[in-house]
Length: 175
Image (cartoon, rainbow, N blue to C red; front, side, top):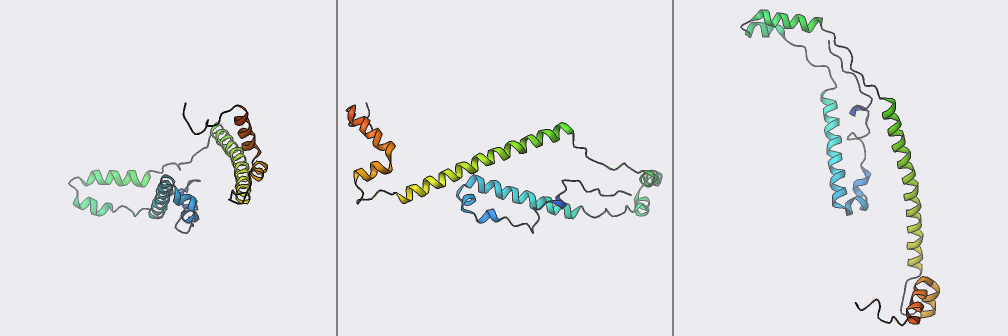
């Protein structure tokens, strides 16, 4: 009588099943931030719950036993009327139509996210280059002031400006 129609976003189609590997669990990035770790755990719980519900409701429901209901009811005519309604009723299949404006909005959001991802990737690469530079040019007791000026010209320029302006204790004392 009633059939189960798979929705395009049905949990049955999602990769968040127990077979899905949440590799992010072992990443130090996710373990370092308790808020993010809690959000990932909550999402994993939601995904597992959705998978369990999809599995539970994937089979057709058991047929209704109208005979036993008629025997235990005070009004068998009411049960007969419900049985006729059940047998004669063919509800239309429920389908979801994704509106064009919603599709356009989601496409725009995806494009914006891709643009931000490119910018973020550039920032990551710049930060990695800067980190490599800093590791290669660590300060040590063997380094001279001229070496430090050569490696960090912006700091050297600031120091020279402070000397010229006689701002000897500018960064150490409050005014």
